[in-house]
Length: 220
Image (tube, rainbow, N blue to C red):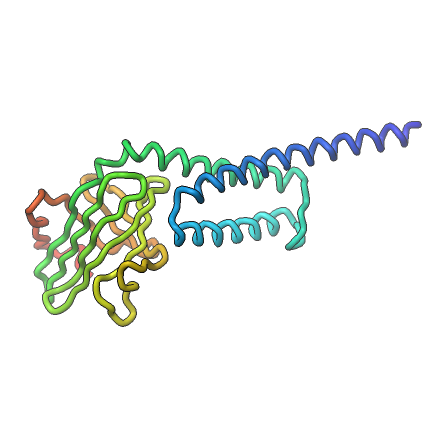
């Protein structure tokens, strides 16, 4: 009789654990679908790849054999954390429709050192702004458009160029994968490429020019 009771208790605990996992998994699927629906084709592709990598990481942490589904405390917790993260992105995107316009507008950088360096960035308002960029020296340069997505205070950007350039961005209207982000740093806007700061931009008045960097400290 004691064995029977123990078996019943174990089965009940297993059922409860399975229910908890199913609840978090359904929550994750719902928020993933909502976030995916707010992205364009390239954004959805990037999100799918991110999700595959997350699943592989979760299974490794939880000791789950690839391609199998295990509903235990570890997988439930990891799935809950992932749902929390995506829900934060969805809420943040909505909030930034009114919360991020402080960054909207024209930004730039100018230097006369060596061959010179000039950067221009125009960022419209919105959670997924589509703006323009220009970057070059006195001898060469390029320009085009970008598509952005706000995540955790950073505007992640995918670029296209007006003209084909070897090793450069795809020619518009085709856009490449995420190639960097901008984020406010004090009164400036820092442009990062692969998590390395590329240049710090100053706000530019409409029809004006960026202040000249006479120290060349941001010169690349």
